Length: 284
Image 1 (cartoon, rainbow, N blue to C red):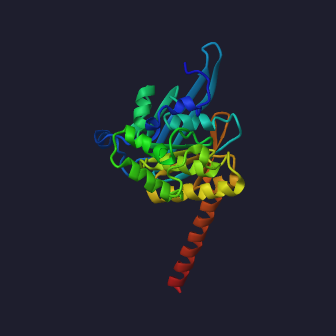
Image 2 (tube, one colour):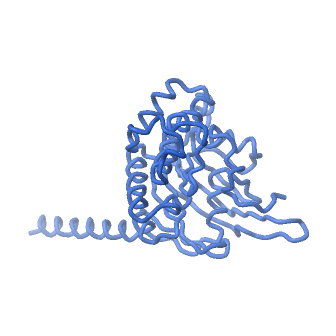
Image 3 (cartoon, one colour):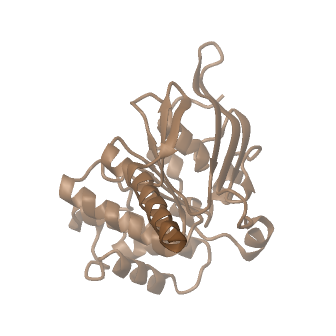
């Protein structure tokens, strides 16, 4: 039985390579998802923690499909199970039951080592507390996962990604020399540099002031759009959630609501109005 610890505690991250290092060519050829397949498909997903004598049901039969390239927010009060769901979907925690396929890879029967290998290159993770390596520069933090995977030109790729997040002038700085917003930019660069299929962001603005948080959200959305990755964000910020294409709400280990974000619904309504106007004009 899995011990009851925070699913996003530092020990879950392992080495940076486990989170975001690129897969080998053979891995990619064997498991690359077809365009028609969802990025995430879960059926009857459960998670039980605690001891045999006192089990605690955290996830209670989650059914979920997330399309490739979709931007999804996950809302819910503390204790609702949203962080645990994200941990299971990202391969940081093994589900107790059910079926799960992520980025074309069957996660259902993988052990901890298998999940770590499956995450490579397919999944990037951005956490509230940044989790940068303190003895490495910004460039080294971004490059390390790719170096451990044997990728080429990792320093150049890392510097290019740091430039893309607005830190071209801070590439040789250490985490302690960076502001909170700058550290989160490095974390975003580290997650995106290997070009993963999915990006998971757990309260990415939680440790930032309001203005810096807005800038980080805009950056995260922009980099996701440029790479085409699927994005799942855990947040308590309803304004942020409404910017997403889809908003899921959890309570007591279950998804209790699944709806379009308000911005997406407004855009859909505008498009419908334009279509009706075009049809009316053609008819006249």
